[in-house]
Structure formats: C-alpha cells, structure tokens
Image 1 (tube, rainbow, N blue to C red):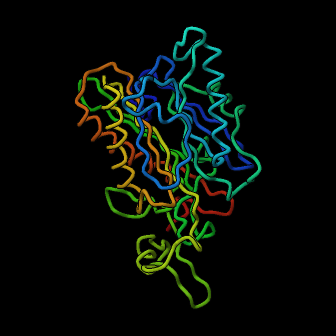
Image 2: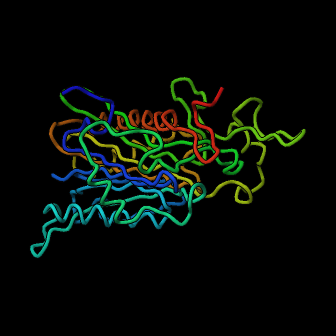
Image 3: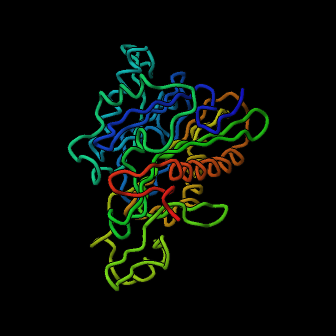
Length: 332
C-alpha cells in the first residue's frame, strides 16, 4: 500500500470534513469503525472537550469509534452528536446489550473571532462530515476544523495569520505506521523544526513610529513576551486558542501505552509551536491504535511526535488567506 503522508495511511482510519466557508467554521471526523484503543493528553490551560475521561487508564471502555475535531468553541461540541448518530445507524458502538453506544470523544477550537460568531458546527455538520469520510488523503488547509483556524495572536487577531488543518504519516519498519492530523489555532507561532524559522505567526505591529515585535515581517511571539515581563497578556492578547489533533498507529498497544503515545505526541506540538501549552491554549491530542502490528511504545511515541510536528507545519503552509488575514504563502 502506497503511503500518502496522511493519517489515512493507517488502515481502518477514515477522515471527513464539513464546513461553512462563509462563516469560517467547520469540523473534522476521524472514524475508526472497527474500534481502536484510545488515549488522550491534554496540556493547554483552556480546553474544550467531550467524553475524554473514558480514555484514561482504569476506566472501563478501551475502544473508541471516532474522534471529532471542531471549531465553534464549546458550541462546536454538538458536532460529536452527529458522529454518534451516524455510527449508531451503522450498528457501531460499545455493546451494552440493549444498544450499541458509539464512543466519540471530541475537542474544540475557538474560531468565533473571524467569520460569523452565530454559526457553529452542530450535529448536522458532524453527520455530514461522516458522510464525507474517506480513506483517501484528506484535504488540508482551510477545511473542516481548520476553516477558521488562526495563529500568532499575542498582538490580537488583527496581527495574526490564517492557519488550518494538516496531516502527515511515516512507516517506521515492520509494517508499523504512525500518522497524525492537527487543527492549528495556536496562540503562538508555527515553527519549522528543521530550520527554527517561523512559518506563520504574529506579525510586527507598526503604528506610526511605534513598532511592536522583532524587525521584519514576523513579530516573534517569544520576543514580544520578553518585552512584557511583569505584565499580563490577558489585556490585549487573544485568549481563545488551541491545537487539537489525533496521532494514530496500526501498532498493538494497551490503553496505558496509547495514552503514553498521546503524551509523547505533545513533544511534536512543542517543537512546531512556540510557545506551546500556555494558559491561553487548550492543546489536546488524542491517540488511536488499531492493533495490526507489534511495536515498542517508545518508538511509536517518538515518531508520533515527529508526524504531529509535520502535521502542524503542513496546516500552516496549506492555509489560504481569509477574513483579511494573510497566510504563510504571503510571508516574504
């Protein structure tokens, strides 16, 4: 099977997007209808999630049947209800004898600041995303949960840049594959880990003779933060940010090991977003293991970090300008 550098290179994983291009919001479903051992690692200080407690060790349910990534802030959690309905109609779910209950955790990002704040992903949009789900490589950029995603918001949304959703994968030997998908709505800047250069982020603010940020196009969020030591960011920086995504593998892993993979995948987020895991972000990564091949969890986790970082940079590079905000393609 040829690899396409996408999370759908993991057999049994399908991805579907649905969005409103005018309202600049949408959702993405990652379906694993045969079931996958699920885990989660949540590190940002401002998360929005649904049905995530079940993913932790020492809880009854081991397998999940899908994950929903959505815009719309907390309103967007409704999209998961559409995925649950889709799966129930197909007899997919945790068997409780009187019914099969689909296990579909979800996480949201805040995109109400651009487009329309009154239109958010709902159950119908989540259902439509499931109808669109395919094992083909998913579209990247301004689609699905990435439709309204932005990055680099330390100087406010006016100095931010458009981001989106991205995916990546790798085969690490013995038939074992690791893939990731990430919707990137970070407070910080997106960084190319190989070069250390900013791909997309806060842009230097120029108001008459006043300049805020480093010389050049990018303000460099870390440099701006240094200049604000002893002050609070809450007065002017955007407070509604997060990176949400999924790391998936066809390895055989226990629930505890899958949670470890999610934890290690956060290293990839930290490599590709600077700063990461702030109190202004809700950074949340799910992990899925479909169980076709034996593998060492340390190796799987190490490469989960690699592909998650790649998915983040691809999300920024695939984005198109929207709502008056430039994208990486516009940067000098």
